[in-house]
Image 1 (tube, helix red, strand yellow):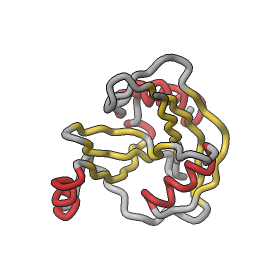
Image 2: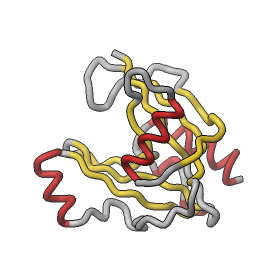
Image 3: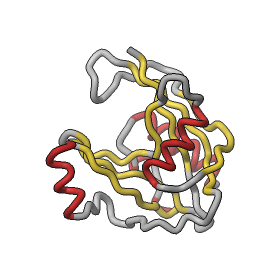
Image 4: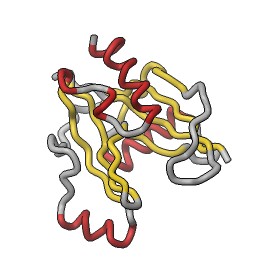
Length: 154
């Protein structure tokens, strides 16, 4: 089975990159914000929905950055393949939500939720000078990080 994932690259005016720290089924993962494409949904619509659901912000989807061009097995479902698509996103209003600066700073109530759902997340910005492929966990995200450093953060 092929799963399509769509991710947004949000860089604020201070040249910080937004990432999501997630604790999923015992694994701590730092990745870009986004999620799975639902049936009957376009990739840009998926990204708008995901940012609204996960971050409670409305975004404009900009330029396409990258689409996976090799076989990437799923980290969570043996035998599945992941196809990931990345776009630049811009918030339609100033992004004022609380964003952590320390990796995996989960609140107590989030940790309680994890006990039943096996999944929680929090977002944080990484400063331009601290951002690298090593900032991220997933192999596809590492490729995109290099593109961001070269083409967007220059």
